[in-house]
Amino acid sequence: MKSSYIEQLEQRTLLAANPNYIISFYGLGGAGDFGADWLDKTVDDAGAATNSVVRKYNEDAGGRALKDFLRSADRNRNMRIDKAEVATLNVRVIGYSFGGVQAANFARYLAKLGQTVKGYLIGQATPIRALVTLDPVDEPPLKHTAGIPGNVYNYSNYYQQKGGDTTIDLYTDPFDIKVDSITVDDPANIKGEPLPTTARKSNQVRVDVVYADETVKHEVRDNLNGKLTGRNVNHGTLPFFAYDLAVEDLIR
Image (cartoon, rainbow, N blue to C red; front, top):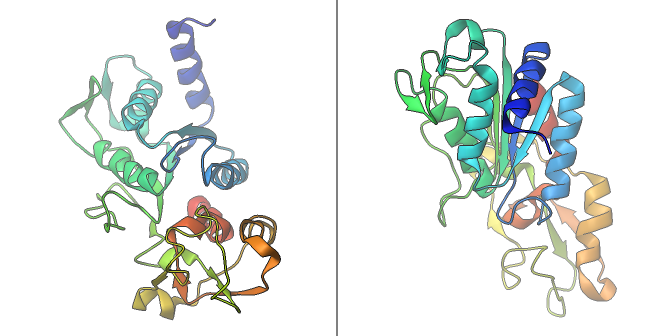
């Protein structure tokens, strides 16, 4: 087993050699739970496209993520984050559901000038190249992250801005349908929630056909015929429909 000191040296060396960084936060339940495979694919592909170091955390591991990042960024080993240490970094952050709120909080803490975060004095805000929050949920019915700080250059909120870029299965025979709870949050409300007006006008709804065909339809029982519509959003189906745009927003 590696010592913590050796791990710290490896983290610093890795960051020094590669200034590109992607931090991701899973939804409720963490790695191995709902949506995790899709989020992994998103960040892995974005990481490959940007030659980034990728780090993945559960929705309740914001403190650990901050400590890991600050330890790596502190190349002078003086427990202080200075301008020269972050000037060349390209940091991208993404989170789904509860992890979306954690992602936004991660960016906020890195902008707390003059304050000490996890033992490190923030002498310079770390620039966040992209912050992507995918249907962020704090407490129902909150689905937004307010007060995004100025260190975030590109911010994409997949609920208020784009309606999650999701679609929901709208079935031809709604009376006999049986839907697994993993497919929709509320089986009694199969149409989900109306898209915000700005999202309906955005025309940015796309379908990831691999996930939609292979996963979502298989969650619907009794082989019911159905079709996909882009006029409704549902938190539980977001991972199956936002992949391509999420990658685009993350790597820009």
